[in-house]
Length: 218
Image (cartoon, rainbow, N blue to C red):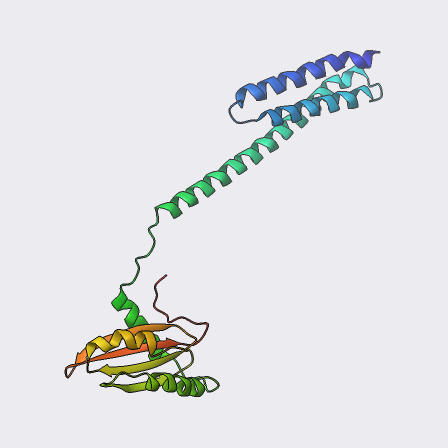
C-alpha cells in the first residue's frame, strides 16, 4: 500500500500546475485548452492507478516526470496559440494594406484611343481571318456610305480592322456609325476624329468577334 502514498501528491501537484497555467494565461488560453489539460490529468491519474507498485524512493521521480510532461504539453499549446495569433495579425495587416491601396487611375478616352491605335500598329495579319474580314466589312461599309462620304482605308489584321472614312457633311458621322456596320459581329471603337480640308476624318476600329480593343479601360 505504500506505493499509493505518492498518488495524492501527484494529483495535487498536477492540479496546482493547471491552476497556475490558467491564472497566468487566462487572457490567452481558451476554455477548450483548459479542458484539454484537465483531460490530461484524468488520463494521467488513470495511468498511475494502473501502475505496478514501486518503492517509496521513486515517488519523487514519478511526480517530476508527470509535472514535466504537463509543462511540455502546455508549452506546445502556447506555441500553437501564438502562431495562430501571428497568422491572424498578418492576415489583418494584409487586408488593411489592400484597403488603403488606391486603385490605379483609369485612362482618359484620348489615352484609350492611343492604346488601341498602338496595339493595331503592332498587330500582324491573320491569313485565315483577315482577308475574309476585309471583304465582308468592305461590302457593309461601301453599301451604306452617305452621299459626300468616302472610304479611305480598310485593313484587317489578327483581331482588329481599321476603317477610315471622310465625311463632307459632319452630321453624317453619327448615322453612319449606327447603320454602316450593321451585320458586323464584333465591337466598334472610334479611335480618332480629326478635321482635314473641311472634312471630318474618322478612324474606326472594328474588332473581331469575341474580342475587344485593348483600350486599357476596365
